Image (cartoon, rainbow, N blue to C red; front, side, top):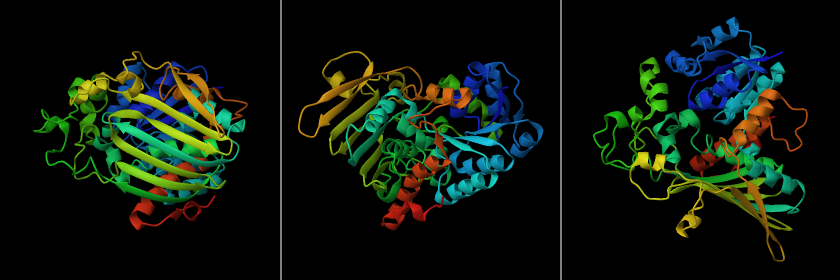
Length: 432
């Protein structure tokens, strides 16, 4: 018997990660019975692209009343997650939620309480767990390659294409997303929680808005009408991007949402430069940072233990040639190590490497071949487990609501620490 799904929130992520694959790749085990979005025109884009006639609703409760649904997939604006998750649970539905689970401790507690009260299940989609590179790191740690883990240095870089895009969308306001400390870093904090098999206990953080927001005098309301468009390195022409034009520009009159708002607008109140100190239940300490205006995108991590050190990195995107034109940067991405480009070594990366340095000298190089697909191949592996099911999960790839809570709460605690100037205890924020 096929599992019946409904999706609330039809944007780029909902369409690409769930709607299209459910219809095209999982129709033998899954049936997508309804779409819900406050903008019916945007939901209709999904039907138009797929040649389907899936029922569309703007009223979530009406959808639950009329359709037979087993599981609701929530891919809305982050600040709405808790409302749709709780209403689904109370109507007897299981829930799959995009990360983050929600944006703050209060909403998180409401979700945990509703799950416990109803007996239904919430799954959070942390796709980075499923990438072959990260999976290999988890396997090595489970094999005790480092022994007791003492510390982690973890640094994530968002570039001037992907990073900038968060500030032109709804993510640029804390009330909508909890900032990148929650929306984006929930991925990163979950990786560490999962790799360590420990829970975060205390957080101290700093954060500033150094680059985006009201840090440039020349700015407008949106790119489409901006008088500075011919001089701005971040000008996004929605008319010249068929996918964004169809999904957003052509549907604006349905909800008034502008996909190309100015990244230097006064409304922006999230941080673009962040650093946190975190200690964990098993005694590990972490130094974490996130920078969202980098000339390249990727991450670096060092895990230090009694038996040695793992040096880890992934170069996700790099612009081989500098250009002040946003479209040029978007169209000339490469999955390359910047150092190799500088040395004249051509070709995109086919593998990532784990470097193990034993405590008393030497090095072991462990190669992990790259695979195709979104988020380093993590998306398709996550979907397979979600929709085709599994009898075993030895590494604990699939994340539940508590994992979702433990990741977002590091970000929420970071936001609170920045405001107060004091460390924040995670277990003071929520009860299991």
